[in-house]
Length: 243
Image (tube, rainbow, N blue to C red):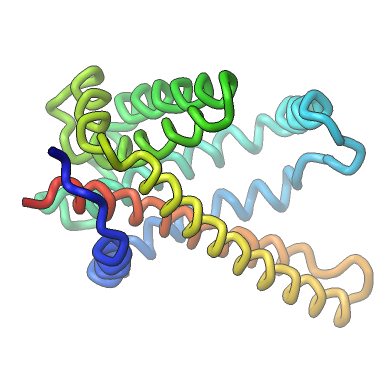
């Protein structure tokens, strides 16, 4: 019988991981999550969703956005993806405790990690397309997929999927609601901070604001949230694999 997820232990471990690796995680997050996102926000902006009210219109708006800005979004997106893998490596591989070794291993793992995450994303998407609840459940079951892919690379593609499915048995909904609450609280906090910064910039500089500062703050907050979610995923994995 699988052990039940301990919310308190997971959250404490999330914080402990970030504290123990704050220098390495901070450097990787700053260089590969914050900077690319800041560049994309400055030069590509955000999709225009003002007149989009239906799923089809929203999808069309994103298609226009990506088609017109792929030359910025593609390299910055790849760098951010690589940064997330490097943080996974730093947090899960005790034999690769330095930034340089983590980056080297992350580069080697990138194709495998991409394939595994793509498969997980397609499985979750199929659940959401069928009905909302199966998608939510599958999202919970596959949350530690990145951690397993990096920590237990010897399992290969099918072994990684099987491993995460076995680990999360009986905990799908618990994992989903934990990640949902953390993501919502973090996103709401970031939104409030962003609103205050935007208001301050407009009070100082007029209606145009200060895009350089506003996008920088948004990118920094986004990097913090992304790093937090990676650490949370690793903590969930560690909690479910603890003896």
